[in-house]
Image (tube, rainbow, N blue to C red; front, side):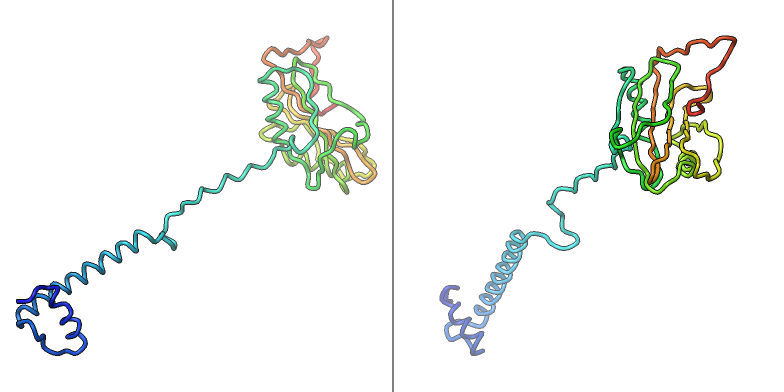
Amino acid sequence: MNEVGDVIPSLRLSAVSDRPFPHAEAGDVYRVRMRIRASLLLASVLALALTGCATAPTGAGAASTAPPPSAVPSPSPSESASSVVASGSTDARAQEQAHAWLAEATLPPGAVPATPADLKPFSSFTGWPCGPYAQLTAYWKIPGMGVTEAGNWLREHPTGDLISTAGGPWPDNPDVTSTAVGYIPAQGAQEGIVYTVDALPDGVEVRAEVAAQTTTASCPPLPDGGQYGAPGQG
């Protein structure tokens, strides 16, 4: 019986000519054919396996190696969009509370951050009778809006969970040149935020005065049992 190396050339010719093998018995040829077929099958499997290892996965089920997108930054609070003036106590807790209230400030549509240099002097200011307290002051301009319209808007859109001290609503009156809207954390409190609205030739200017008391704050007693008015009420 011939060796496999001697039979392979005859097998290749037989695959083409389909003639009997001249140098091998029928049983021997059958066994050689089976070995060759097994060898070819094994070679095909190995080729597929190597191809799979060399090819990167694609498509919807492929694992992505790209880094996840960075988190989208949150919108800046109101105080970062305006020129903020800090004054009063540097107590950390009071400063933190003042910044938290100012961050929740809500302004009418079209409000544009401003600085004191952009505006005319306001007709009034808020006197906080109890202290010490930390204070922040911020400014905006609102083109095309009247004083009573802006005041009513601020009254109808609370600052965070603060309580409004304003009356109203006020009737529309183009002759009104100034108004104020106050917000406090609790009834009787002498801290919070007061919006002052003054008329401009082309709209209004708005100032937010924020005061947050320290833990040692106190209120001077008034004579004859008098009581302080609520912030924003004059």
